[in-house]
Length: 327
Image 1 (cartoon, rainbow, N blue to C red):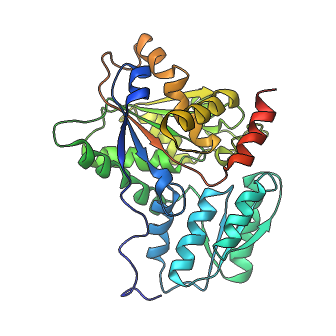
Image 2: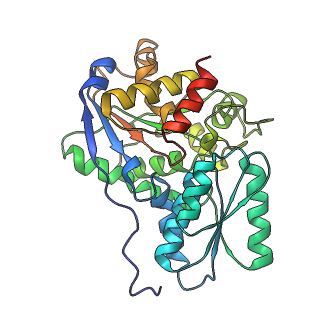
Image 3: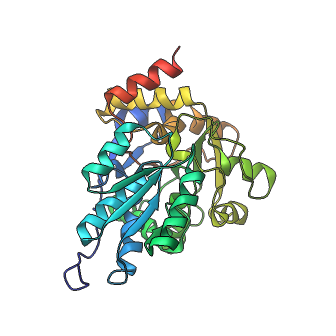
């Protein structure tokens, strides 16, 4: 595909929906940015679409390492651009993800146990086969693409309203970096970000506690799409700057799963466990506790939860998680 026929962007402007039930739980208006409705199933298409457009016409194919969602975005964009895509996934990725990637026309290679192993193979393939490497979270063009989520939220909320806080799930830190940059562009550097991770996939929280980027020994959480052993350096640096303030919080896999189940019951939407981490900020009372501790204002104002979505979930996978985590 050449530049003249390429679409302006591959993502859509997703709905911002008020949740009556979540608002009741949080004691303030809760708005959901429904990134699960993106063509590839998650927010990842914003940054990956933007990055791929920048290298249009200079690539003979793309390679991406992914636990699922980055790969789905890269496969979707490559297909639209008429480029072959190779997606390297770790063995921890559900078979559902592999099948979805193949349906998009991608070549899928399974390497290693965790994302870091798959990424090493993707970098090798890029060098040996001359493919364009598409990183899943650690690249300025990705963050630039993800940053567009905040002007959309601002436009949906209207001119006289800004969030009291924004809630995001954090894996490698790509979405977090984009939200920070988007808030800065809007001049909203006083809006706190609540970053949510699951215990066992908590590289950002570990970095914040240690005061430096650290490498986890292993990924023990079932939220595999949060499973980077180290957070990107820029995300950590943003956590230290204080503008906007970033509050790092953890929930258990079970709390994330309960959030996924409650969200399905109340909002009629199925999302993956990684997204459940953000939803658990409301469902598990994290927001209310942060208010009690004085880390968030009371009253808070509108709370925006980014529903990052996810491709690695269906009813069979949900039942598998239930069996693992509720027994």
